[in-house]
Amino acid sequence: MASAAHPAASGVTATKAPRPRTGNDGTGPSGATPPAPAGSSAPAGPSAPAGPSAPAREARRVPRFVWALPPVAVLALVFLYPLALVVQQSVTPDEGGTSFAPYGEVFASEAFRSALTTTVWLAAGSTAGCLVLGFVLAMIIAFVPFPGCRAVARFIDVFLSFPSFLITLALLFIYGNVGMANGVWTDLTGASSGPFDFLTTPWGVLLAEITYFTPFVMRPLLAAFSQLDSAQLEVASSLGAKPARIVRQVILPEALPALAAGGSLVLVMCLNEFGIVLFTGAKGVTTLPMLVYGKAILESDYPTACVVAVVNIVISVGLYSLYRMVSRRVGA
Image 1: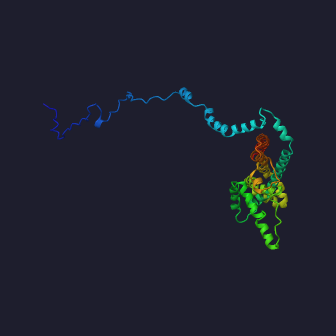
Image 2: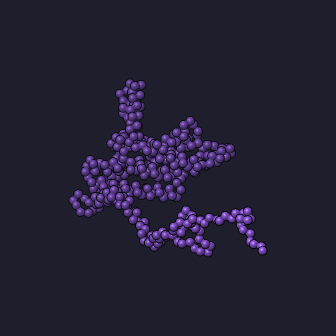
Image 3: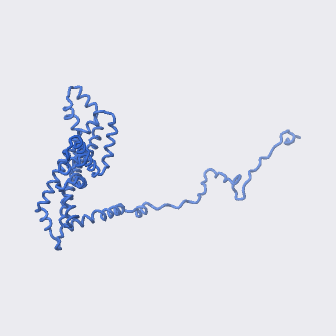
């Protein structure tokens, strides 16, 4: 009778696979959660709180015009309100009430017409001088290599930050009655005074304004010249063009936008210049800003001073609008 073989009789000891230990909470070994059977979905964990919906976010978004209110309020407080007071004072005679009589009196006065004429011709003359001198100097810096040309170009940027009275004081040290030029002349000739006494005349004011405002023309010109392809100059030169023709037909057309923008800006700044006229001591030169200063500070005639100030503001805003229009059209 055949009997089933006993495991021990076969010489192979059957070992019983150990059962995995489970935690008290039914998890897998060492507390690990056993994988979910195929076809079953894992239990969902705690869900995060849902954010606000799109309509709610739109409702809580601050309107854009609210962010513009603080700067507009500051601008109205520090600029528009004082300007409104000036305009109000210009139509308020000393007798009281509201009247445009101060405008008629100011426009009929010889002092106002003389100051307006002086302001216009000084601004126009200074602008023309700045355009010519700035164009020549910018061409030299851009197209005539010399040691230190880059340092000079960088100094132009620094020069723009100088106050106008600083340039006037420098000219006084050189051409003043006791300046360096007159001192050298008296030492060499033994004369009691030197020949340089033009700083207290309109020509001295014109020289000071041209000296100070020329870098404002040079800066956009240097930027325009840096974009000019040097190959155009080389081709024109190789074809036998003279330097004057190269400047007229190649360089000048590229410089016109920068000249228009720089000249418009200088014209506006010269129109409102006060420090140069004051520090030169040119008592016979009265511009609109100087007339405002004299009427308001020296004579306490506030209605007249405000009328002149309003006229100066209107001219300045008109010229600035022209400057912006020219800048947009020429792309400067």
